[in-house]
Length: 320
Length: 292
Image 1 (cartoon, rainbow over the protein chains, first blue to last red):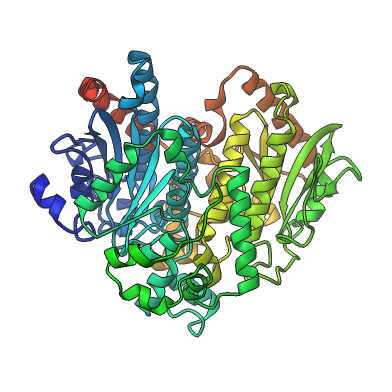
Image 2: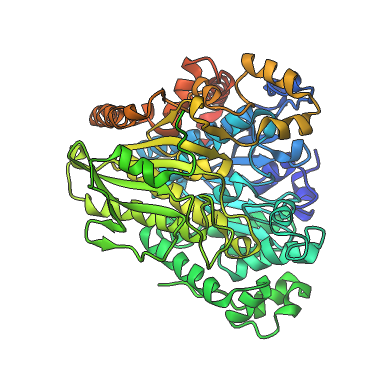
């Protein structure tokens, strides 16, 4: 594997799941749990004639940022599109469970200073959701992850990181959106229904999945940033993601929880207002929404560098 | 066999006490009847006990979001269902555990709203919001029972069903469908023919569509063979869930409980191996991370 320094300077998009996991935490602090040498591959793939991966397409482990244990899940899109099966799903579930157990232990061991040692969960998404070769088990695992997200509420921060090729779609699209904080790059994408499926459902005239600009306008990092579905937009560099993550974790947890988009009656009310806006506006394109939120020349936004974009982009106003 | 697909409203009447269902109402809160027509929410009694009911309406069409028909859960529908759950939590906030009213989910949905506007606005948040609300209600003590009467498909089932304490299903004789993708699609992707896949599914329930496979994976607690039994079986599970929660054994319920059940029934073996191995490996390095 490349050195930690090389990974920091390099593209997040181009990095593989293991490099992202290793690079998102402090230098040389990452320990992979259930690494490929454990050979915990999917028992279901060979039956259907599919090749296996010794990590089942998902890297899990623990590292540090300062004194804080950071529990990391990093999905690998190069293995069956990062789709989640029984083993990969259980690896996510186990990571969340360990983070919650560590929270209890840290609290017990450091009753007065546990805030400085508060564990966090970081998930780098690169998946379309359920793996069809073991769809039923994958589906059930998704529900477990959501359940544990709720267990983590008011205890430890859960942070989604999206900067990969595949993005976060299908069931993992709502998992990503259910975290406390979402950090994306421009290249990152988050949604529920992938572009090809939308085209199939509504027709090529309304949605052409081969139109990359359209796909990015609909689900990409810049759009999600304007909508406030993504809290922080960073450039495509592992170090930029790590820096943003570190800055978030320096904030008090109560403040981190303010970044949420869903998870309470008040937040649902706020989202319903956005849905009402959409019903009235009937946007034909994401740019209609950008304009509605005060971006006078929306067509120029996709062309801007992240730095320029962050200076000029107007976002959906939040309550409070 | 009398099928229930597309008949969410009929199912409500068959399950709750006669004429007890009050749509659009949870305690003092009233829903706008125009909002989220693809889902049905309200209050009823079941054997005299107050319950919140959440169902799909396959006959409704949402004129503002035209992808919503045939029971699809759209942007409005997901948030409406989430609101029903939060209002239920609010209504019973100060009550004892044994007084927290049950939530009954009647499941017959083919999917989450697929569309351009849905993606622009963020359909992932609507379905996610509902799931977080249900998980919160479950952990606050409300017994949540889901009953699959028709279609429980993929992400829509995750949204409406898979966060329940217990999941029940009408048997496959009623045409019930629980799956991510039909076997024809799996055949196309794996390039194996359907007969071979059906053979394989008998030994390994993880990929094929069907209620019985979900049962073996722990995804369905109990299968119901007669429509007349829906009421009594739901009520039985509500009582069981109250007892389990009174003992504080929340891990026996919900998604985690289904994981344990899946291992017990032999359908999901790897899950437990993975969780145990990772716990052991972490234990070996733990002090480095706890005492940094």
